[in-house]
Length: 516
Image 1 (cartoon, rainbow, N blue to C red):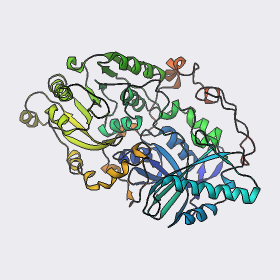
Image 2 (image 1 turned 90 degrees about the horizontal axis):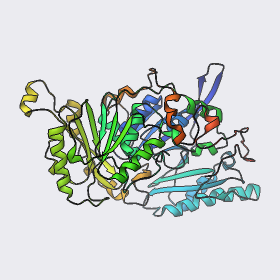
Image 3 (image 1 turned 45 degrees about the horizontal axis):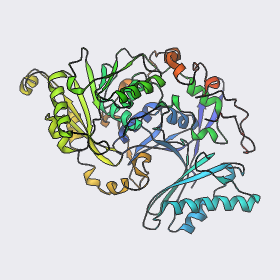
């Protein structure tokens, strides 16, 4: 069936009939509640949590905003057909029923990505070939010629998902994975994925009301993601292009309006500090921070964590230390023992969050966590643990009214083994698609309940508080493209682009795009 419905949307000067349709946001396992909360605050309807995905309803503007503004989404898909198939021929026949002239022209290129979990369909590439063949054959029969395939830079990206006999064909509105923000100039060994970093920050419940510290910052991903969240800046600001910009019905004016809207940004009156023992990592982090135009609130210095001292101001610490899988680390257990010692003696009165993989590493920290949240870093099943640091003995802290573990944290701790109860996902993470792309699996929807959400970031709602203007953001824009971002039409992420008339027939390009 083809999905879609219409709704009246009021605009200042007129009333437009905007089509509303099902959309799917993919994410990492463990970040689904955070993504659902982001979507709810963005104004999405019918928000439903699945496994490694959240479905929602929205119009074209919502689809644009989801790509541009969500911190924890990897990809935004627009389903165009659901059907059941038990053979490759069934897939071919169903795909051929779609009128592909609505999406493609013979002068356009396309590609098909497939994710398959089925006894009947064992090879995702074979499914992709059948989808491609159905599309190409339809064009040949109708027009005598066909669109071409392009893997690297297609005009249209299609996503085919099969779970047993349930099939979903979607338009991929994102293109390159949304974790590729565009600010990273260089990286260090095994850099933290940007979406995972943002998810960790939002899971911590940080309200941007304290300083932020990462004592082992690597290339600075946590620092930059924290700054974007603190200032309520859209992570899509640095992207050169989204896939929907090549669609025949792309509304350039609407996206310009979204892109240039600075009303939701806000002042951040604290500081973000990054440290690393490796000077190469420090220089890399500084370069990335500068490229993002965030040098005014982020400071990066060379420092061994063993020399870390009590911060002057209230702070939160979030870090992803090495754990011997992706980075070889001499005296790994000694490193974690040192982390525990520094936290205990030099981080009193603050909260620290540590992501790690090995239980023996956590054991060396020697501190009792108040919460453990399972997360995947790539294919590694990790835990994200919170340590609430207080001065003195635990019983004295409690006698003075201190709360070590809230009721919400107790509830979450009761769920800490939920990944282990669903070990089939472990096998799925070893598939070629891996966790970076995430998968839409066969699942039962659960209505999203904000009151039960982890971590929360209520201060990051779209409340319309007075925000900092684009001028502040543009202080360092010479480091990102060489121009102030006064108007998206003039800057457009890396070069001036002239928007032409909308082309629904696919006969000519809508704009000229500068080559890299």
